[in-house]
Structures are given as C-alpha cells and as structure tokens.
Amino acid sequence: MKLPEIKGFIDLSLVDWDGKVSAVIFLPGCNFRCPFCYNSTIVLRPEQLPTMPFEEIRNYLTEKRGWLDGVVITGGEPTIHTGLPHLCKQIKELQLLVKLDTNGTNSQMVEELIAQGLVDYIAMDIKAPLTIESYSRATGVTAEKLLNEVKRTLEFLINNHVDCEFRTTLIRTVHGVKDLKQMCLSLQGCQKYVLQNFKGDVETLDPKFKEIKPFSQLEMESFLSLTRQTLPNVSIR
Image (cartoon, rainbow, N blue to C red; front, side, top):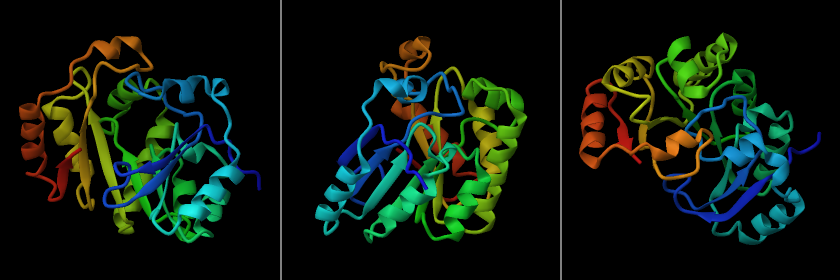
C-alpha cells in the first residue's frame, strides 16, 4: 500500500509525547475547519509544502532509534489517509513506539490500528461539548456523521481501556464553564484529560482568532479545579 505524503518532520521533540523523546511526522489535510487551527497551511494548502521522502525519515529513525522512544503522527488529521496503517507498520518495524494524534472522526481506522498493535498511544481532541451545535461552531463543519464518529471513537477508547488521553484547547470565545462541565460528563471513565490554553497571537485558519487573548493562568487553574470535580486525572499543558 502507498504511504501517505509527509508534509513536515521534527527530528526531536520533548513536548509532543509526555515522558518520551520523539520525532514528529505531519500528514496533510483535515476533515475539520477549526477556525482556531494553528496549522492552516497543512490543512488548506498542503501542496505549498514540500513532500519529504519517507526513506530519508526512515534512515534518520534507524540511526537515532537508540535514543528516540517513538514517533508522533499528527496533522492535519492522519486518519483520513488510507495508508496510515502502512506508515505505522514501517515505524513499528524499527522497534519504535507510535503515538497518534486524531480528532476521532474515523473510528474504524482507530479500532484497526489498535487491533493490529500499530499504535501505542492515542491523543484525541475533544473540540467542544458533543452536540451538533457546539461541534459545528468549534470545527467549522456541520456534519452529524462526523460527530457520531467522534462519539464512537471516544466510547471505544474508554470502554477498551486504550492507553490514551483526551485534550481540549480552551478558547475564550468558544468555551465557558457550562461547556467544560458538559465535556467532563462525556469523558467519565477516561484515563487522562488535558486542558490546553489557546496560544493567541499566532496565525490561525480564521485570522480573527489571532486577536483573541488566551485565558490567564488563574482562569486555567479555575477550569482545572472545576474539571477535577468530575474527572480524577486532569492536567494543564
């Protein structure tokens, strides 16, 4: 099977996988249009980015696998690529761990990757409360089918005790206390939930979001306390 195009590569990261030294592979395209997305070029105009030959990446990973723990596959949305399992297999053959970042819209792909032992850890974004109104506002896409896929993936990961985390990027104009409470109820039983503060002052898919101020540290700590009333393992990143 053909490997997906690779549109970005970080050779060393200490922040993309907690407790692991990793490399990061970026795959192009996404089925969401989140207005606050930081990676607008890889989502909207991936053809403007050079394609990196996997052979070069494989050579690097082979050389460095003695001190690299694994590879993070991110995007865009990796699960839109039918060649994703083949890419994961190529990495696993190098005796490296694989972490997948996903929006959860391809439950079948996620289930197959887990069943085949091709992924060791999953980070799934929860964009908003799991209603069509909230998810449409947060993702820029109105599609009940995609939302149902998100719900299925979430339930699969929790019910099957998959090693994973769920994460939400909190944005002043998108999320409030009520939204956070609703998301917590949907995530009961999860291993780990991570709250991420919107960066602000960065290029975003919708330029208006560049002007939005991030939450203060005090506000984030308040959200953390609120979330811990429902979920035991929550952190701020």
